[in-house]
Amino acid sequence: MLELSLDELKKYLRIDGSEDDDILTLLVEGAKEYLANAGVPESNSNLYKLAVMLYCALHYENRDPAVRIDRFNFALESIILQLKDYSAPDGTTSG
Image 1: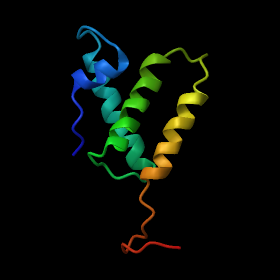
Image 2: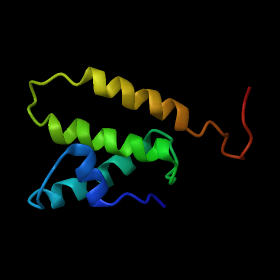
Image 3: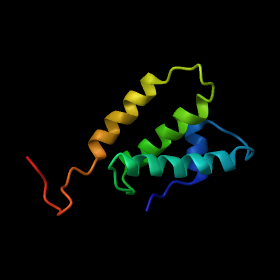
Image 4: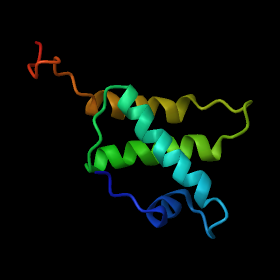
């Protein structure tokens, strides 16, 4: 469902070349799993795409375990809260 090309992600991350294409592909798949585990259904919305790109940026640019990533994590968590499916298993919503 998500239409995000590697070229689009590389432009967002300001990456030239193809040396890290395998890593970026892994990060995109990891982002989709992360969002699914957070209760966010996969979609092609701009907000979902931004969440995937933020996740990829967070993990690509901060590979040093000593780096604090709270600022990016806060942005990602904000988007997740907006995208999260709060429906009950039977399809109804509470509230």
